[in-house]
Length: 316
Image (cartoon, rainbow, N blue to C red; front, side, top):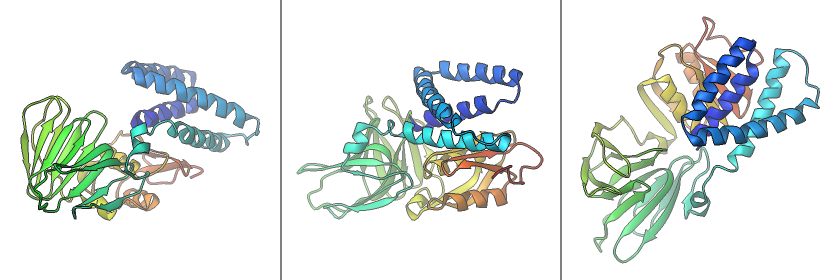
């Protein structure tokens, strides 16, 4: 639940930084409504709030300097530790026990015994199961690019995960697992997608993308341009909402990278590096009227509000 953890951290920041009692009461009501949307929201918020209070109490003995700048340093230090401590609980057992896995920001190519290749995206994990009948890649977290070689034994090449299977009828395709669904993007030839609890098989052709969950497949969509660009450590965006851009960049950066407010409907077209998060943010700041607030190396918030959004935030 990395996204929920980041949302809980953002609520803690906002509640801590409330300047007036009225603002604090309004934020508390909104935070309570967020917690009520799902039991895991409330559970993770309580866990992080307990850690936050412990860290804040400890930091209070350090007597930080007075003023808004001092408070910002204290919040950043406590939140950095909070995210690091909370993050230790998040990776699943399957992730740690997987045959192959990548850490946050890491992209790695793996050659398989049949001549095929797979490339793991950031924070991804797979199990590899080849036998006399099938070639199976079990995706437990994240995203994988499969480049399938011809097999003399004619064994099918299958990427399976929590939501179903994607069987290669050709060569190159992507399988991505998100919180509530999965996505298959076909770069070359054809892939057959079967949701776990459905008898229906959908064929996805080159240049198409299909989202599915364990129950059903959804409407076929055109594949995004250069959907596999991440394996070259680049992300390509075409008229993408700023919120989507920040969410993708956050996948490659340890800690918290969050769009704090989205009061302006900003969109971005361009290419951003995945291996240099600060450079990616600098490119965004040059292209769009945004403000970047760095509480520490692990806590970075992006803000679109204010007429002076292009100016650096205090204590940046």
